[in-house]
Image (cartoon, rainbow, N blue to C red; front, side, top):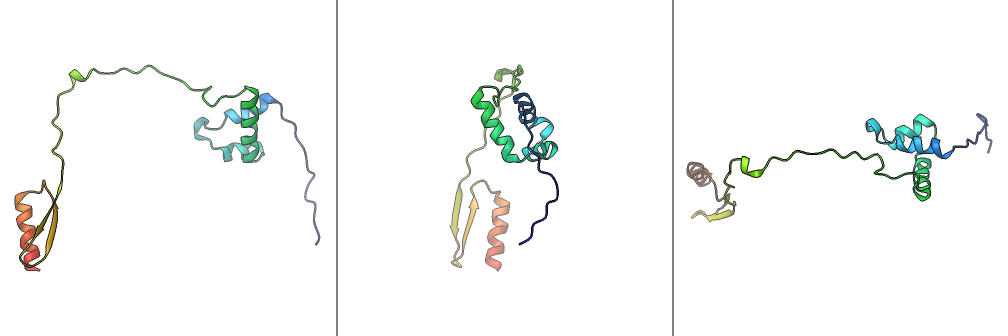
Length: 122
């Protein structure tokens, strides 16, 4: 088996500040781990390893960049009351032709009549 050397391998050294900057870039503007890894010419696994290492050193926290904003809540008394719809159940109807119809309990009478006639005619 023959091998070919295409380039010079290089081993880069990254300090904690560089690692932290790269790990923190994940998620900014929707950037994925894969995109950040390609941008900095490292593997995805390297970013995950750095994340673990930085967590262990206490330099990185997943929610360190979290931002909490105040939320205004409108009291429920200002909203009109809306009656919740009655629960729907299924009804099974056996016709004289030994066919069975299953339909929701809130079906319109006219629609049910058309349905029965259609099944009887078939």
